[in-house]
Length: 208
Image (cartoon, rainbow, N blue to C red; front, side, top):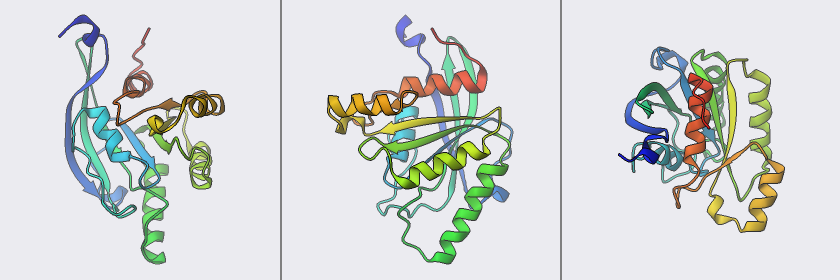
């Protein structure tokens, strides 16, 4: 391993643990959790695969909104010979689920309970589509997160599919959301900044 690679944070372990229907059958809260949330079809599974450098760790559904479970992944970072274990948590996508009103209400109740009551959550990764940066549902989710976030938690806004924008559109997005991170699963770019945000907030790791 060359010195440049060694000085960059990377995931050296990534394993699926289990799926849960609610907070009641989730894994124990023995580690800090990084939660991924976003509209169906925003590229949530692809983003988790990009961050972990695994092609199919997180599996996307062919039908947007079909994935109903909370998925847990055992993650370990390596940075400058130090290891940092935590959990990635993939929450069901929102916005497109074609299910009955009753089932949808059960999902929303379970997810709200998880987001509000789960003590182990340290980082919320809110994924938004760079082509549609200002949707009403994303804005509502952001407002909700800001209303419940604790002092030891952080919200990180990540725009996916940045490669679909031209330079003018990218510049506009950066002006409107200066604190956000942009990533491209296609070009495999932007993941280092996400890693740094996670390690800095959860473990206090400092980067130059």
